[in-house]
Image 1 (spheres, rainbow, N blue to C red):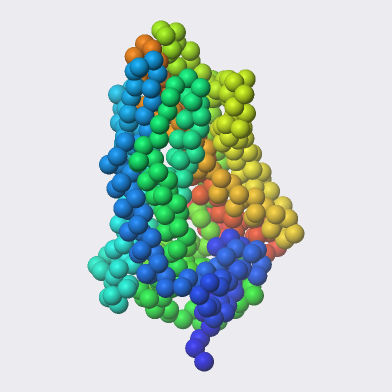
Image 2: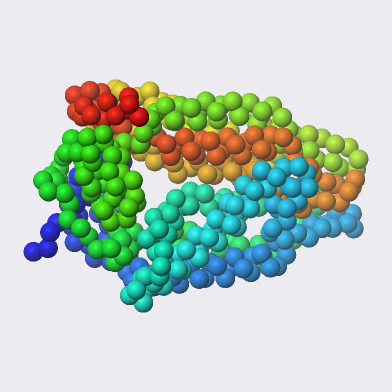
Length: 425
Ligand SMILES: [Zn+2]
Ligand SMILES: [Zn+2]
């Protein structure tokens, strides 16, 4: 009988033995329900095919016109990259970089990485650098926002539909296909199979017990490949399979989350007080803030779009700050019943955070597209940068929060050395 494969849950630290999995099956943590492993059918072929298709769609998306508009005989047609480059002309290089990275550069790097990695796995001999690549690709996931950009494009089009004639170009549809294929590629990666094929499965440290928390056994699950590794007396170690640093808990998790939340709150003020963009129509300029934009849309009767912007730009960032602050405060008052509710809340804050970027993309698209001189034009406002900052800071805050703290309990079950380590780091 082969040795049992053990895993420590990344969200609640419970050690569980993986059952044998057939393609299409998954193994969930028995304590918190987090999916530990999901087995895919022909994982490498599938990821490779999807990544190639996504890359082709992206190539089409950048080579054809994206959208065009016409008002009073004057029109403009833009390509996808212009949504970023036009911002540089308005002295918003940071926002331009954020747009360029999240919709083009990071996805392209990710897809090329997947192709390199999976083609090596398929031929049975991984290409050089495969391990380092496998370790880093996962980190790109939350920062790729092609799907959010599509929503931003739709919102922009509805916003100006009443004022000008808008036409969608070939690249718009190609980019939609790209966003879907990119999502499918990220979903298709079977990390467990990939690491097993790359580096086998070393046995779990001697004396590892399933059905108990990892921290009390001085072991932890590797955040990248999942293998269980031994920790030293300071709560540190290194993964024997992928080389990732192992830590009992993310260092200074609560302090870092608090600091990032505070920074996000500070940035939230200019994000709402300053205009996010200025619309010039027939020589008359009208600046609008985020909330002002929502109110205008509502009064124009586009309440579905007004609701999207309200949820993405106001409800989600504020809700996320409140939720993370509450999670940090509640860490010390833990009981298992509420722990699973709080873990679900944490997963939700991690999942929805990136969707706040919609308004930043709306600004990028409208600024690039609406260029008809004094007849009609849109310029970006200082709030665009501040708001992009809020989104990035709250995403980082969710990442630095260690959900295992939720399950650690107030004092009775928290191992002594974790307290000491927290002080001397
Ligand atoms: Zn769990
Ligand atoms: Zn590892």
